[in-house]
Length: 414
Ligand SMILES: *Cc1c(COP(=O)(O)O)cnc(C)c1O
Image 1: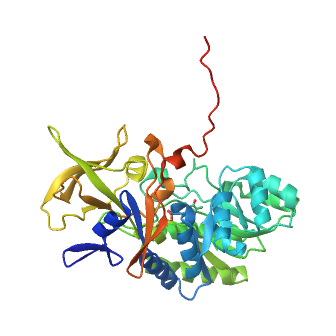
Image 2 (image 1 turned 60 degrees about the vertical axis):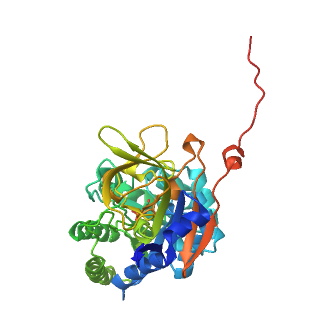
Image 3 (image 1 turned 90 degrees about the vertical axis):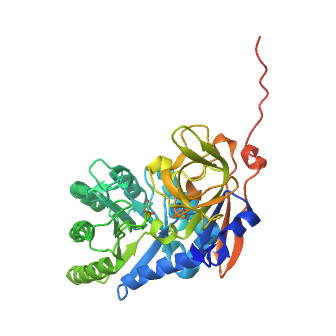
C-alpha cells in the first residue's frame, strides 16, 4: 500500500474506494506484488535448475492459483482438495507436489490416480505405498533433519518432537522398506518451519539432505520446502535471499557433481509469495473508551483473520480514512464474543467510527484460515491488477450458513 499525495492506494486503487465499492470486511490482493516476489526468488537462484511450487494453503483462491500457474510456478498441496483445485486451473500434474501429513492411504491412492508427485512423511505409509505400487509409482520422501528454525516453536516443524517427516535417524529403516519393496525414490524433501532467518541453519539442514541423498541412486530433485521469512513489523529481519540463493546454488551444484547427475532444486514458498501482497480491510463499528484503554471495535474478528489470536502474529494497521490523523493509542478488537484482539496499544491515526482500517501482511493464512464462527459470513476477496479492482470471491450470505443443513424432525419427548 502506498501513500500517494495523501491518499492510501493498493496497486493504484484508493483503499477507501475499495471499501466503499465492495464493502468490508474485505481481502484485497495486489497481483503485481506477488509477481515481484516470484521474480525475486527467480533472480536469487539464477543459473540453477530451480522450481518454485507455490504452497497454496496460504491462499487458495482459484484466481490466485491461476495467476501463479501463468507466472510459471508449480504447486505445493497438502490435501486432495488442493490438488483438485490446482488441476482445475490447469496445472500440469507433474508440476504439483502433494505433501500431506497424517492422511489416509485411501486419500493417497486417489491422489496417485491424479498423477501428481507424492511426498511421503512416515514409515507406515511408505510401507503401505511400497506394498501397493512397488516401483510403478515413484515417490519423494520427507525427512526431518531435526533443525530448529525461528523463535516461534509452533511454526517450526523440524525439531525432535515434530509430527512432520521421517527422522533422519530412521534412514536405515527407510532403506529397508525401499529395498524390500523395490521402490523408486525420485525426490527428497524437508520443510523445517516458517522462519528461516539464519542462512547458516538452512545450509546445515541442506547438508543433511545432501548426505541422505547419497543413499538414493535415482533422485531427480531435492525439495527444500519453504522458510523464506517476510517482514511483519517494520524492523523485522527478513531472509537475505540473494545470499541464500548464491550460497545454496553453489553448494547444490557441487553436490550434483559429487552425485553424478544434475538434479532440480525445488522450493515451496507460501507466505513469501502472497503475504505482503494481501490487505485486510475492516470498518470501525465502535470506539470505546474504558478506564485504561481506548478500544477500536471493527466489523470482523478472528473468524476472518486468526493469526493474531492463534500465533500472536503482528499485523501492521493503518487508518486509511484519516491519513493525516494524529497518531493515538488504540487496542483493536473484533466482534467475536470471546477474547478477540487484533492488536494491543497500537499507534494509529485518530479513529472515528466508520473509518476503514487496513491490516498488512494479510495475503497468507488470512482468508484460507477464515471460518463462520458466530455465524458471520466470510469476507469478499478482490484482486487488484493493472490499476483495476476485480471481485474474485463474493461475500457469503445466509444461504452459505445453511446450505448443507438437514432439518430432521425431532419431537420433544414427554
Ligand atoms: C505450509 C507449507 C509450506 C509453506 O510455508 P510458508 O511458511 O507459507 O512459506 C511449504 N511446504 C509445506 C510442506 C507446507 O506444509
